[in-house]
Amino acid sequence: MLVSLIKDYLRAEKPKKPKGTIFLRFPSLALANLASLTPEDDEITVIDEQISPIDYNMNVDLVAISVNTSVAKRAYEIADNFRKKGVKVVFGGLHPSLMPDESLKYADSIVIGDANESWKELLIDFKKNKLKRKYISNQKKPINLPTPKWEIFKKMSYLNTNFIEVTRGCSHNCKFCSTSVFYHHLHRKRPIKEVIRDIKKVKSFPKNFIFFVDDNIACDREYAKKLFKALIPLKIIWISQATVDIGEDEELVKLASESGCGGLFLGFDSISKLNLEKMNKKHNYISYLKSVRMLQKYEIVIEGGFMFGFDNDTKNTFRETLEFLKESKIESFLAMYLTPIPGTKIYNEYKKQNKLLTEDHSLYDFRHVVARPKKITPEELYEGVSFISKEFYQKKEMNKRIKRRLFYLLKNPSVKNLFQLIGTIAINLAFRDRIKNLSKDGTFPKSYRNI
Image 1 (cartoon, rainbow, N blue to C red):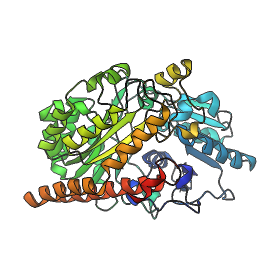
Image 2: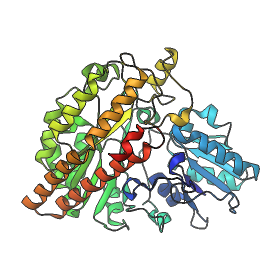
Image 3: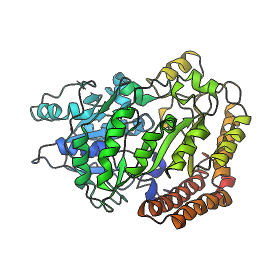
Image 4: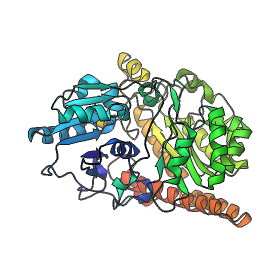
């Protein structure tokens, strides 16, 4: 059994589970990759807790759970239940890799690093009843993957399952980033011909829409340019993630657009250079507005990610960030709290400085205040994140963004611009709905139920 976990309030069996939206529900590509590496004779069951509850009476021999920090407690609970029945449990993912000693208390075995490097060996050992306690992958090896087995997600209520991985990791060394620690600050690339192979084999409608799940698809600019050139003949529409400095290279942005890039999630993180400097995010020492305008010039939709709670954040930071969001006219925005994930440099620093407000890792989900800021109180941080989220997703602001995308579509009718309009509407409604839902549990003020 392959298990994908979700936060408690979104689990399928919860009676007061928010209706949520299908636009914020994504399949785990890691599970599809593992399924593709599993022998055909082995029967695979996939459970996504947001879609269906776990049945502990299922007849399974091995349970593999992908674990991040915020759901680690839940993973341990599931493992305990299965292990009491004599079922072996394996953990993989970020948390076991960064916190192996803790994870081994609850699992029969853990995979450190890329699971695809160890999965076949693990299955052979399991069948011989010789499961090792740890499987450590060589993160420096080239990525060699078969086509993901997307069919495991059939009838699981995902809007689209055309998720493909092009590269892994990021060569930057931001203090707060768990991904860079997990991948040892390496950026590994797949052979472009294998990426093209997988694109041609996608199964989910619409087949020309692809989600590249990379942490930073443009980290290696020369590789990215070669990739984008290879994508142009395929006439796909794709979205992914990148760092803000992609906007410094017009040739790269132009090729991304020509290859079908419809949107990018950009990690702005902070408008303060002092914050960026302290977090070792030097590649963001650029003009955010100039970079945004470059992407907009080539009609690439932007979702901006910001974190709040850095040492140089003040009460003015929220209004200053809001002013930038309005001036830049980006299409969607995600506000998060600075969260020191165990195993990262910032976690070790904050723990030493006694700045952690809690060690309850279930709250380390970027939507709870878990660390003490320097220049504002935790209460002021909470109020600021609530304020900027509400202001950005007010109806009048949301309607402005939708009208702009509609104008682009009418000015230049195309399938890509239609997708961008639909996407802008969907993601804005989804985040607005999420604010309403989270106002019920205190993540946002209760008054936000009526925004």
